[in-house]
Length: 90
Image (cartoon, rainbow, N blue to C red):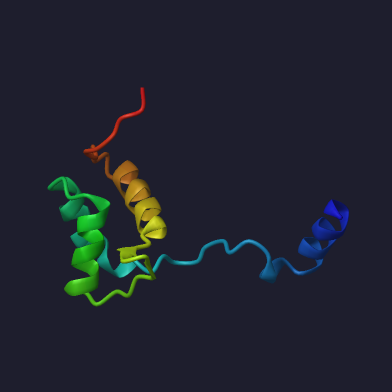
């Protein structure tokens, strides 16, 4: 099965991994950078995007699902050497 999947990926590279796809948060990069520098959490940034910029988020039991936003913010913080508040891994 693994070999069949690898063969399919080689035969259909355009349908494989989405490399180079721009993030939906890219247009808001400058605002997000400022919010990160101010120490806002992912949830508060999601609330800002939803209320001010009108970016829709999927809802799950009353909470926003912000996994992709969290990943984008992590990469943005790493790119601009921004220390994020919150839990630290030891």
